[in-house]
Amino acid sequence: MEKKEKFGLSNSQKLLLLFQLLNREKSDGNVCGSITIKQKIDTDKLEKSINKFIENNDSVRTRICFTLLGFKQYFAEYEPIKVEVIEVESEQDVKDIEDKINHEVFSMIEKPLYKIKIFKFKDGTGGFIGCMHHIICDAWTIGLTINEILSYYTESGIEYPRYSYAEYVKSEKQYLKSNRIKNDKKYWDNLVKNDLPPAAIIEGDLNFEDKDRKCGNSIYCIGKSTINKINEYCNKIKISQCSFITGVYSLYIGKRANLNKFILDVILSNRSNYKEKNTIGLFAKTAGTVAKIENTSFEKYILEINKELYKTYKHYKYSTSKILKKVHKLEPKRKRLSKIWFSFQNAKADTKSINFPYTTRWTPLETTYLYDMLIELYDLNNDGSLNIIYYYLLSKYSKKRIDEIHNGICSIINQVIENNNINIEDIIIDEKLLAMNS
Image (cartoon, rainbow, N blue to C red; front, side):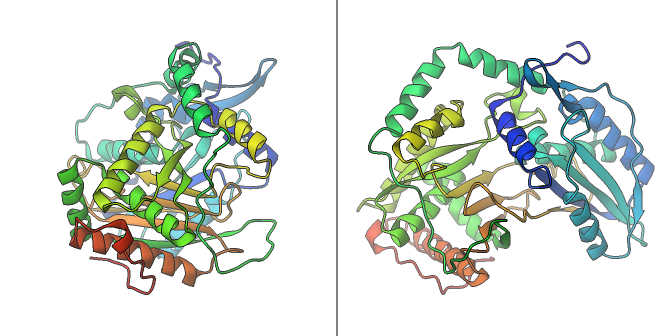
């Protein structure tokens, strides 16, 4: 591809750009975090590794521009960057720098959409803080970024392929001319016709106005032994861990809200082949999946959830905007398919090729405009546990209520792994139990 060839934005990129331009003082589109290497670092070597990553992945060098045909993007020519090294004394210093970077709003037009800093403690250990605008990355990208930079740093010898995000955008154009879009349109038209299922809801314990829609966050961990039991059950009935966890949350929502059928918004990776799974960029998008709570065994229920998720993924490429236009016609006050969003992020660190200890940390979101609650699940450190972070409206949920919700989830998991043959009607939600950390 020739330098500065301009091409269109993906559907997800268009939505994010519109949101950012309408909220120019907000940094909600930032994705920020840090990597701490648990041994003395070579800052020059780390800087070279970061530069090699930037050179190898053109989408990191994305620039948004405005043309007579609307907003376009191109890849700036690679030029080595000097990465600032910041001396820090404590982990709190690192968090403070993360917070500062995360609150800096990106200039979206003709400017870099990433920032990166190296930090170093007095004992010689350290790492780097990275921040990218969501328009050029998703959760899977974060995993790829960590693996590639640290692999270069450790000199693993792995050669990472150069795949261009432009190929994905071009594939979206080809999709619009294909027969597949007709089948996808038919599926979503049938789903959102007159009997549109209600939105998933989780009852809050607060109710006050907040125009800024500030959100809190609570992080929990389901430990390795519990995850191992979940994986054994999933392998036994041939479903994914994602299907199991989605089914557990759906069951909680259905039982607590007395809903037999509803739609939950899920965020799935739209990477459908090897190239896309190894390409930096924004592929994730939201789509609705249907949950049905019937008087049957948990196994039959979870297999049905697995089927519905498969349908969602199969028809995933269809434009979310077009789906929502149909939803608005049926229910003018309904802005989204659901106010509860669910994101199962299966990107993992490559612990085999990276031969030194390190830890990762996300920088939490502070406001939410599209949902009342976002539930993200991830094992980025690839240690066999499952981290769960709840982002929730502070005007609707207290920290105590989130604890109750999570305990209710854990109580369902505990009953299912103890009795695989349990019926849906026999599952009791206990919101007072302690969360499972083992």
